[in-house]
Image (cartoon, rainbow, N blue to C red; front, side, top):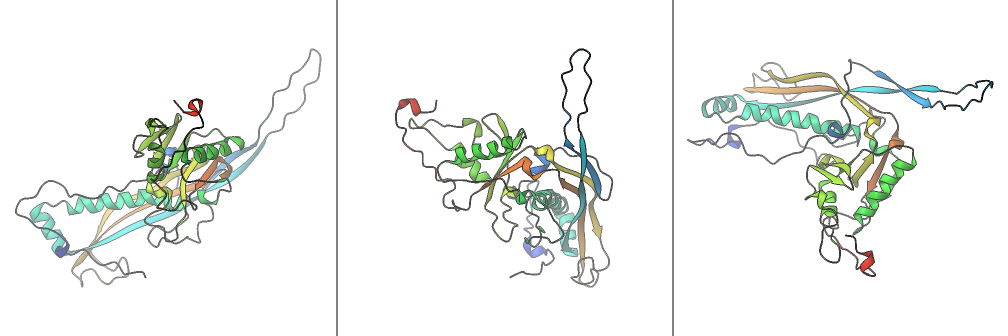
Length: 323
């Protein structure tokens, strides 16, 4: 059941006589797409991205022989603008408390809005969902989730499944240059050990932030699975890809704006309710050049209980033990 957001009130704040700098918060990761795929400058509106569909080939020519033609083809993909916004209401009393006690509420809301917009790039680019509702947006026709190259992430053999996903990208003619992993799936690989209790993938650390899998750059983030925003579980736990195939840029960015008048979000007149609103907006240009540049790791057969529970099989003999 969806509940209507309400304005932040001073009853939600602690107003001590002495305040430590800043406000403690649970860390929320931003976008994995922004870190794996290069940001490109864009003007506002739909952008036609030229694509090479046919690659010319060199011809060996003998002495006195005629030169033959080599075919080349071009197509295009559309990078579509996607506008996103975050509007948060607070009461006048919160503004006064923030000013008197130096709580940093204003800066904290601006920072939280920015994080929400960063996560939104993944939520629309991977899952095609409206971040606020968690439901698939009918206005978004394509996302990484639409990729047909899928492997099942089997319990206890997380590394082999990820290797298979990388192999699918290679089989499609792309050289994978990065992987995006759900944090718990990355952690499961990091905790894998051989029969002598040695870590198989020490370069994975504890599966947080930037990691490395067999020399391939990896990034972890909850936006891979879409949690907690997504309404219907995606079961997506890993994405291997050639990330230049995901094109994105910022077409317009409106930083935190203070709104003191009117009804900006349908919850009533601000002055009548003794409230103000803080709004941040951004327009992303998003396009996928070729879905075959990606492969997905589907964890539907694992379930939450299976992630993090690593079972390593006994090797048949010492030669099977990975050093």
